[in-house]
Amino acid sequence: MFLTRILFKKAKSKCIMVQMESIVSGHTYNLIRERLAEKAETIRFDPYIQKESVYREKKRIRSM
Image 1 (spheres, rainbow, N blue to C red):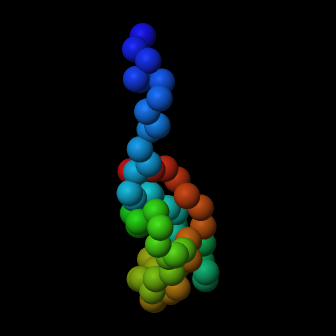
Image 2: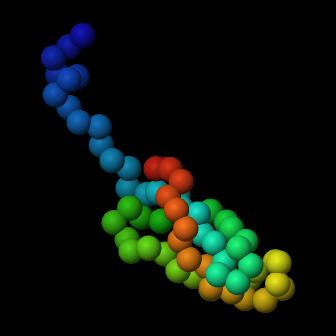
């Protein structure tokens, strides 16, 4: 094993995948956003209630 492999840190990814959840019905979908951006909040069509609804970031799923 080389000494240089120990000294280098692993680079962090630039983007992360987050789970978005509807405030009204609980419907969820995945969104990719930048790591340094604020928590996401969007207005999107909700298939459960057949209307547009506000979606908020629920949790982080993985790095991209």
